[in-house]
Length: 219
Image (tube, rainbow, N blue to C red):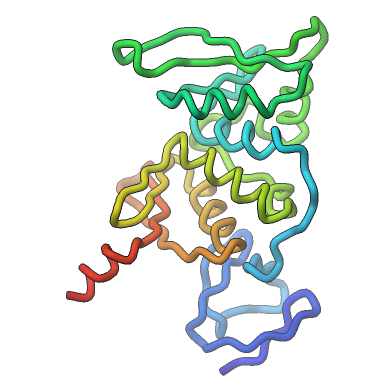
């Protein structure tokens, strides 16, 4: 067992215990160095945030377009649209743009009710997410600083885009390796451990094992 001090907190960990190091990914406790910046479940933030931010940011990072005049997202879920509509501030609105997949999926834009620049776009620019392609998306550091409720809401909306949940567990996929590593780290801040998987050159996933799936693997 190793004695480790992280950000002033002393903890004990086995040599094989995994820590998420920003910029490196998951590494064993015995391989940590003084210069490593570790993100752990003990250090999740407690910053209060307006309810629309985690909900909107989650769906936009997961299944949104962050280019052009205004942000857009695509979904087949009416509950996602309802949640976004109910949480955005009064100076924003959700507008249906087009439908496809035989009318089952719809694209919506989140625009400003005023003629001046939409503050959602300005916020995304500050986060360095505007004009990012799918393969370049990531989770901004501010999300890790939010309180636990906001982080959970963000993950729920993220999963509503490119995630799947079934009786065996939950999987989130993306063509952005950095996004998947960030999702894995954020899950850890709420006490959920997961596996990173790569399927081909541009297909990455974070996999949360459900109990039944775990039972099967042990058979």
